[in-house]
Image 1 (spheres, rainbow, N blue to C red):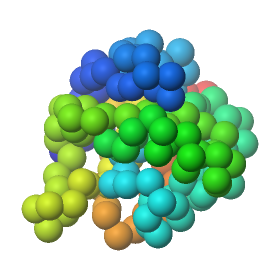
Image 2: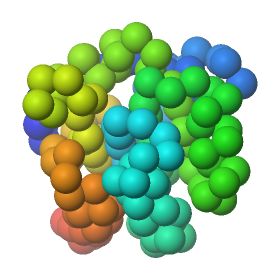
Image 3: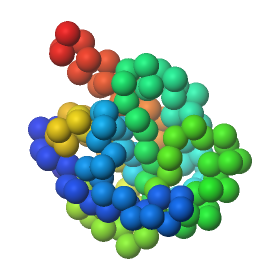
Length: 153
């Protein structure tokens, strides 16, 4: 899996309108990019809702949040509406983005869960991988953003 200090690959994701979006076009400000296994599963729902609940703090820290899974745009739209998610969910239907970031599968079959904080230059500043600590991704990413901001001032 890619680590802090490495360049984020310029992968292409699919937004809710079916438009292909290059990762570099999303780096107008720091980005919290989190990969999760599947919409509407218990861990993924807890993680998405934790990002939702702290979304204002991520915004205040100057970052955007984007969730990525292989689910369809329709599934993402339903999941997002059901849980009132204020951030974008994007599709990676062929797992090419997941592969480019080197995210390992869990038990060899489940899509892995990983979170990256990427700066405006495309450098990964923080990386975390844990299938079972879904909500820790949220608090860890926020802590990393605050440390980056503090170091810059």
